[in-house]
Amino acid sequence: MITRRFPAACIAMSLALTPATRVAADAGDLLGGLIVGGLIGGAIANENNKKRTVRTTSTKRVASKPGISTATRAANREVQTSLNYFGYSAGTPDGVMGRNSRTAISQYQATLGYAPTGQLTQYERDFLISSYQRAMAGGAATYQAIAANPQGPRGLLLDYRDQAAGVVAQAPVAPVAEAPAVMAFAAVPEAPASSGLPNFMGASAGLSLASQCNKVSLLTNSNGGFTTEAAMTDAGFALSEQFCLARTYAIAQGEDLASKIQGFTSDQIAQQCEGIGSAMQDQVAAVSLKPRDQVMQDVSAFVLSTGMSPAQLSGTAKICLSVGYRTDNMDVAIGSALMLVVLGEPVYAELLGHHLGQGFGTSTRSDLSLAWYSLGLDAISNGAVPVFAPGQPERNSLIRKAAYQVGGVSDPAAAQAGAAPQPVGMPLFAVPVK
Image 1 (cartoon, rainbow, N blue to C red):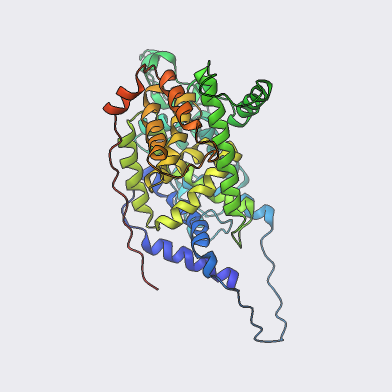
Image 2: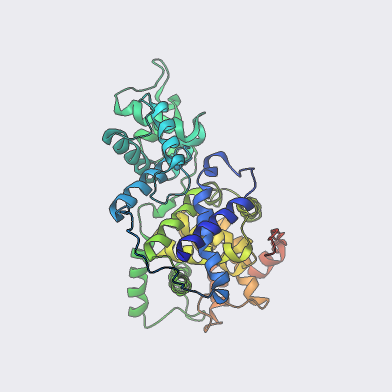
């Protein structure tokens, strides 16, 4: 009973602290998943103060009600996640089809012209799930299509329905270049080269970071060890080595934190962490488009909107950073790193530099990567404790040199003087006193 009451109490507290104003319309309904993810951080913050007490109040045996099978819960979570994505608020994807989920299903059915029964037919469920999977696979093209559609994610769902029925919404005399953006993106997963729109996946589209790191590891072993500053001949490879090394440390740190949490399985934690990628899709996409300080302002607003304490968010972000890299989910990894930087741990900014410099989960933007690299490396130079390879302080100057070379900066000292990091306002949370 105690185990069941604790998450419910935490959910209630998190919801009570959440402001009514949403950061963005598309991400608002998915924010609930992130708030539930705060339970992870809350468990970390309160771990040392928790004492389990088991009390037997009666010897009378009560017959337990049959529970929901694991397979059914997983299928229900898939439905809830899909509903949330398309703007039908089903609440936290917990696998229990309660009132919110039934209402969301009715809204979904009404949108598509089905009878709003609150109970999905097999076809309705299959179409909903396949549409969600299609949208996620579309990457940046999906985000652009949603932004171009007046109805947002629901409009995208309607377009998928029309395409399945063979209906193509295109003006009969309009040239192909002027066809509606949504239809073009749905038909062609990749943005055309002449469109002028950003490609968030960059040169590494379709390439797994885990696979890349396996190749880098083989080359590092063949070379007899990691690149040193004195022996560096390929700055890009030196940065690849550091990215993969940082990834390994991030995974290990998050798994160590997750192992101390009671009441959550590894799969449950991973399921909750998926909410970060969905809820922060706008902030993650902005990394490829906006300067560092503008991105941090957007992330700060998002962090404030969650209503959770810095300790909760920091613990959750570190665990989800690990999950993102372990499962090769770059949206979760980037979103988690962004939160950690804004929460006052600028060492993690190095990760954003790697993503932008090498194009994993972002477009390849060496020009934007330098500001992130500088923020992380300067923090270490100013006394911050290194998170990645803490026993090798000499790597700091190596990574700085490599980053500036790749960015085409011949005088790192001059560049640093002209791009000193600006102070970032830290979020303030009103935490109720127990």
